[in-house]
Length: 77
Image 1 (spheres, rainbow, N blue to C red):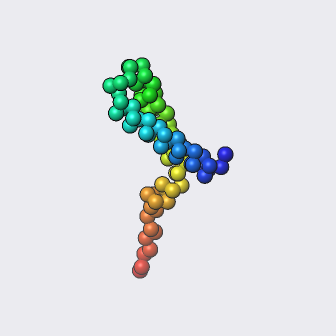
Image 2 (spheres, rainbow, N blue to C red):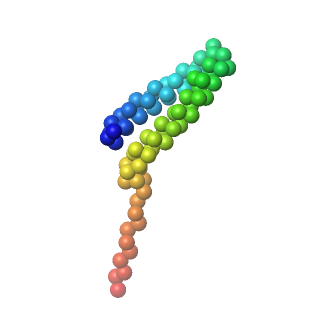
Image 3 (tube, helix red, strand yellow):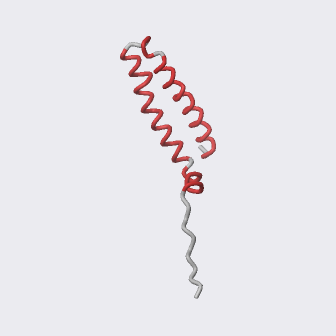
């Protein structure tokens, strides 16, 4: 799978799992403990893994935007 395709898939999955987290918290009173654990806690672990994958796939972007090399000092004597 190409990197751009993996990013597109991971972005859609991140959106779905993020919405799932919000909805499961909003309606937590209507879930049983077992259902809440499945819909919120277990999918939260998947969300964290997807976030890690997303960061890994965007590592070059992070490096180019946030890691700056120090300029070389030139001695003028």
